[in-house]
Amino acid sequence: MITVRIEHPVKDFPTWQAAFDRDPVDRRGSGVRHYQVLRPLDDAEYVMIDLDFDTAEAAGGFLDRMQRVWASPQAAPALGGTPRTRIVRAVASADL
Image (cartoon, rainbow, N blue to C red; front, top):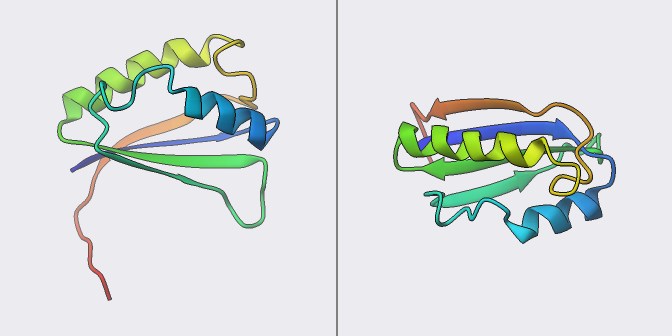
């Protein structure tokens, strides 16, 4: 499984959540198999999103589309800074 990790500050979480829920890049159609949104306990103005893909190619294509979304203030109205992104592969996982 390949994961895209996106992290960035937000100006207003409810506004950000509404834009995320509009799904401007069609997550399912882009190959996303699963995602989760995380917020640090000590910073309500920051989000981390993990999106799982079957291939690195699908993950890279998704990030290319997201770059266009982030460039549009209408599509990303609560973006509070430049997103930090990484494409990673899990090397270990366990339920304990």
